[in-house]
Length: 262
Image 1 (cartoon, rainbow, N blue to C red):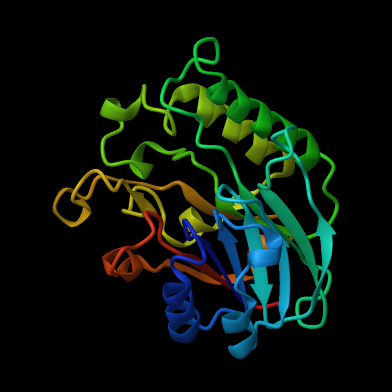
Image 2: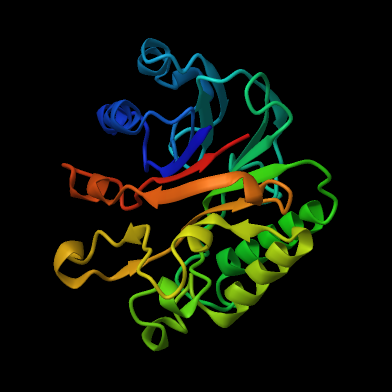
């Protein structure tokens, strides 16, 4: 079972890139974040043509949105409003057939704005509250679960190009790292990115559009795939697909892929 995740930053704008990824990497399941489209306008045709006949979409017009597409049958399992404002940021499915019983959670955690202070930047407080709601949810999980997506946090010192320079930059501040760690500890999640690419090896998934990424390599590891304790031992490999960042008009994020023997 090969599962991929990618913040595509508009699925309609980059539908050709999604098709290329599906053709070259051939995942069984692909989780997309920031699809930026309402559900009734989602571009189904390409996925249907390539055999991704099972699709769960939680979208909205112009912003956010997540979608899970699969060759493997699944059923819709959950839609949580961890943002507590109706934004489309999560969808969960339960795999049927191959991988039966595994829960796959697809999440887009808020970026949190530019200032790491909830008093002057409400978006930062919303991000921390989102994670706290996720933590309460994770504390009660009783099924083999894989949670994937754009977490918008680089937790380890080696997950950013310059730890000291980014300590006050949203996505790598101590309060975000500590809040994400509480979420991890609530269920004992295992980080697939560091299980197979151990720290401090380079393992970035995002580069800003504002910097020439290939020259400066000012990356951060914002995207993650975390497995339940009972699921993690069945993982057989994990890699990132960095060449997508070199494609024309790319997403600022790259895909991650984890393979399981279920």
